[in-house]
Length: 537
Image (tube, rainbow, N blue to C red):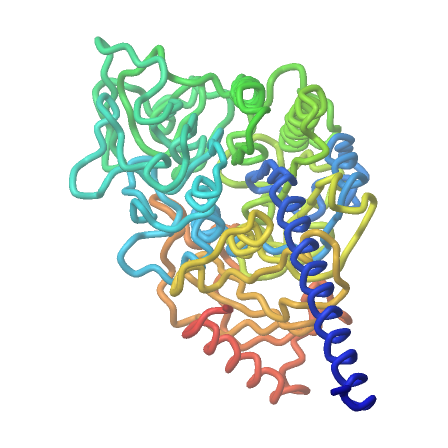
């Protein structure tokens, strides 16, 4: 018996529909497989973070400096993206470094100190924490620290013994290897630490360190000014090492002590060695430079090269180091797939304890590029820093952006770039800004940033508005042992009235317009309190 014609047509339509679905499903699966294979075949980018020390927004020529020339840093910018609104999480060193490592502002910490740490302070990050290098370790990266650390050593339960295994430290928070300066170069101990031990330490010449008083017969700068290469203030007038008086005291370790003029060459050599040894696998290098932090002691071949005094010469030396890193990446054939991030831990300062002529010999150079304030303060000059990102395989060269990016965002952003996830309740201030970092969007994703200064002072920027609450009742802490609170470096940290600025009209923060816009100030204060409580994520 024959089926009706209409029934036959229905069957044909159904079969045709099923066939189309199957074709689409097979095609989709094939495309997904191809995408997965392509994704797997794409190598993870190498990551090099160059974190300079006290380099200002206007200290390099690609940001407008005319008196000092930085050709290597300029070439880095020409090959990638330059941020005009890049921010350090703090205007001092340790809190910024903590925020980069953890994705959380340093001022949140109550149990672990994140002020300007001395060289024997305990580790500010709990061992085993989720950090930027630990995350990259999990992603298969070889991770290394070369240069300045300044996040503490030891557990705080016992005094750090610099003659034995020094732990916990960088290796306990995500680095496979580390060759580092314990704190700042103007603080003891004046030695490099390699992994868990002082490098080149002779057992017969043990090190002792104290921040409480003199040790042995080592001369102090305040007692023997004739021994000094440069005079220093009382805070920097303790033990004399290499003709420079430091903060704190130490004895022993003569063979292990660094020579300040050779530090940059040493860091360059260690950097090149690491890159050569790991060129065939994904690597993360955190290069913490000591330039242009005090004491300014560039190698003699850089003396007088800047025309802006010894601090300017230190910047020329820094530029050389950047050139060394870039040329090594080129020589090894890994530059195209290497994400290089160049920035600074906070804004600049001309006088910071040593009477070395940096202030007098500036020759018209403007370290903050016309912004108000400097290191230690919550004004723009204290936290807005150079930020240059280059990844030839992914970032269009010669790009400039005014989008906001804070260094606390590096953890979440690198997590996305490397295909990692952020555990709950961690990195609460770190925003995922990979599209911003790679120049893929014009959308302003981060709309506000908290700025942190000495004595845990805070301010907030949202879009073009900047609010700084009065803090005159806050105790002046964190300035450092022996420092004078009336010193010009810290004088502006005490703010007696609420301040409101519009940075579009007044980038130098000269006109307090809070009386004209009280509601805006109220909104910003409320937003700052909300971020303080809940974070950015």
